[in-house]
Image (cartoon, rainbow, N blue to C red; front, side, top):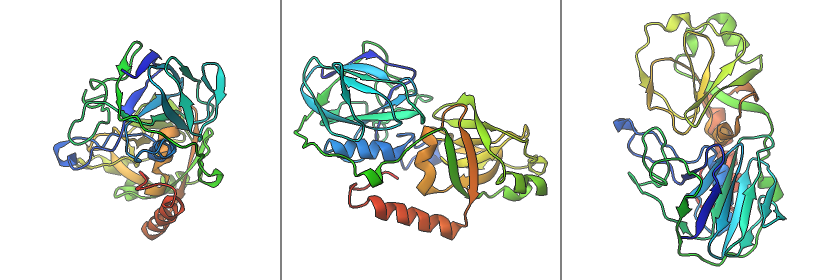
Length: 312
C-alpha cells in the first residue's frame, strides 16, 4: 500500500475519466466535479489529465504517504501542510514515506484535487475508475474514502518540479457568474421569469451534492410545464420543478428528467459547478449557441499547450 487515509473529511472520493458511452443505459458520466482542476493537478505530477486523483469536499482530509512520491493539488484554495511544512497549490511537491499531508478546509470554492506521480489502483467499471456513489461502483469499492482506508499506488515515477502558470490558475470564491444558453423548455417560463432569471442573484441551498445544487431566489413560474415528458439531461442542465426553485445538475446527475430544462451551463464554464458550495451566490449570463461554442474554443486554446487532452 502507498497511501493511508487518516481523516477522510466530509466526502473524499477517487475520480478519473468520466464514464462515457453508457448514458443510454442510464449510467451517468460521473468523474471529477471540477474537471479542469483535476487536469491541472495531474499535469504537475506528469500524469494524463484523466488519471485517477482524490477529490476532497469542503473540509479537506489527512493522509499518510507509505512510499516516496510526488504529489500536487489544485482547485479550491486551502491551507496544506506536509509534516507541518506549508505546501502551495499548483506546485509539484515531494513526499517521503511516513510524511503526513493535511489538506485544510476550502476557503471559497468547494473541492480540492490531489494527484500523485503514480497510478492509484481503483476499481475500473465500464471503462472508468471514477466513483459513482449512488450506484456503488468505481473507485474504492464504490464508496467514499473512510478513515483507515489504504490505496495502492503503482508505477511511481519521477516528477520534475513545475508550477501551473499564473494565468491558467482558476480562482474560486463564493460568487459565480455562469454563462448559459436557453434550454429546450425555456419558453415554458412566464414572461416575468424569463427576465428575472438573468437579473437576480440566486443562492445555493444546503441541498447540494455531486448530483446537483438547488438554488433559491424569486420563485420561477414554470406553470406551463405540467405536461412535459421526461427527456435527456446532462451536467450543467438547469431544471426547474413546480416549486419554482431551480437546480443545476452536476457530474453524478441522472440521465433523464421530467422537470423543465430551462437553461444549460455552457461547456467552458461547467468546471465551475464543482466549486459551488451552500450559500454561494450565482448569476446567469445568457449566451447564444454560437457564442457558447466560441467561448469553449477560446478556453481550449488557452490550455491546450499546457494540458494534454484537457478535461474541460
